[in-house]
Image (cartoon, rainbow, N blue to C red):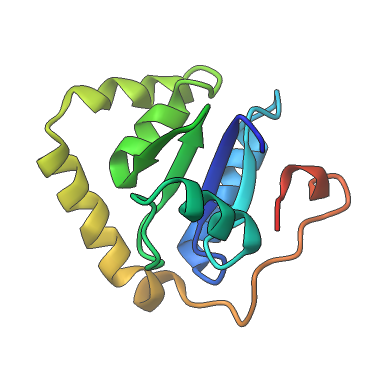
Length: 132
């Protein structure tokens, strides 16, 4: 299993946009990606009971540690190039506050950014960074 995996809702337009953004800014290829609807997510759920089955939670797994919602983003930001890595500094904010913002976006994501008919198929160059 990869060291740094981002689990995301594979049919969410916003979530797919975030993954596309990460692919652009993550020049070093620090992350691998897998849809919450896939086999990789199921395997990780079997090992980590805190990974929810519902699709409204971004999950970041790094070296066996699971981060959820806003904490997932702050933890992943440590591995992004500057200036994007500065987002990790927002991790000092109370989780109650940052997760409230996260839940608000999650609640409206389909209405605002749409829902895809299926998980996006990565380009040949990106394929190695995606897990089933």
